[in-house]
Length: 260
Image (cartoon, rainbow, N blue to C red; front, side, top):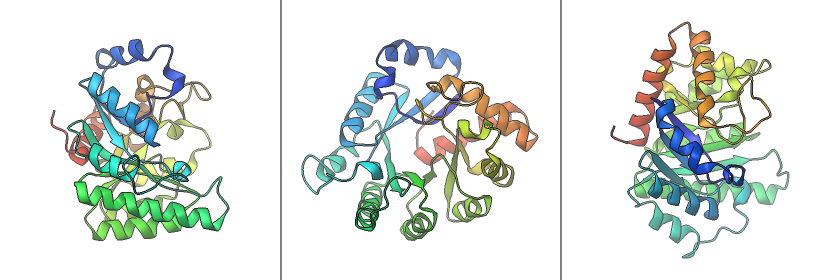
């Protein structure tokens, strides 16, 4: 079975066929699945999916692009603390920094505040974190170094920086999330990262419905396309696809503390 460590099946792009698609996953060799929250609303839906399907687990958290209305109250942070104790919640995420769209320094500082606050949530609840980082390499590294000192574990999701930086992350104990981008012809940095990072520090993910691999690039992604990611990693590393599946699944079970 391929362990899917990052999906968004609560997304409206799955409204037409969500049940049919999810019911096909295990027979197609995909299980478990971590469905990742990115806002309060999507976190609620992720938990609902986890309660509906035995093989789905939820991550609870607020994406940096959705932190504008985040507050310390019963409908936001207090609520996240309550949900973190749910038996089907496996992580805090996705949280982090995204400077691609946000150029305002005040908003960037607010992102940093809520990033640290949700890292504290992870520490308080003893859960790993799923980190989103876009165009924010140095600030993310600095904050994750602080998290490392607090023994917070996790994964740098949809990794997009250099191989050298990836090696710094694994030295701190963080996994590297690899998805469909590794199949793109222009994904030189990610391919170099996959070549250098030991397989024991890689997790498989799709980020579906986004980032579909070749030959489906530009279309709706799903966990059923994970074999394309497996094939490319195996090719880069010169090993069998089965070894990639077994090792990355073992990594994910360990990080999320899920028992088979």
